[in-house]
Length: 231
Image (cartoon, rainbow, N blue to C red):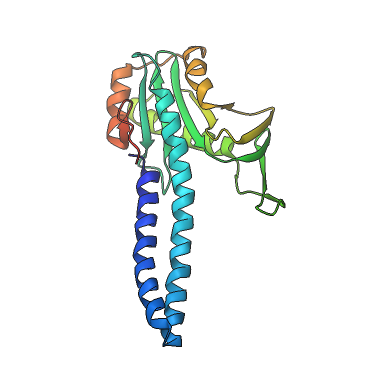
């Protein structure tokens, strides 16, 4: 299970726990204004956690979709999910693919709306419930995956004394995302394009045995290919 799915489940459980006292206070609140205020406070707190649950749950759904797609790679490839390296603080690499033609770091996004990329500059435009457009929070997925690729390269270099090239990929899993990509600094793909892109990518010399690299990364990954589970 992805860490994002576990985190979403935790937020959901907290939200449910907060709803229970809110209902209790609401019942008593008909005769007590203080109890009614307590019910309102618990209800607002539960909304915060349910919002977190929706955000993290959406991210987890995107990661699970991409993980399922990566299951279609042939047996020459090793796939790791939720890779957390010692150098990382409060972040992970969504997917890492090792194969005969190189190493790939994959960043999954499940955003929707109109998404524009110009180099490393990104902007997301969404339409609100009343039809009002507004800007979403997307940051720079290309910079994000490149930073993580650098951390992965440093990790490998520290253990094998070799400097390997890590190819960064950003995948948009949400079918409702309308992409306009111009001069991207990394590959920007849909899930259904990912396996073909990896398999037909030009080979990059490894310099070390693939099995040794797999053994080095395995302790830092939550699970690998063909072990994808979701709620």
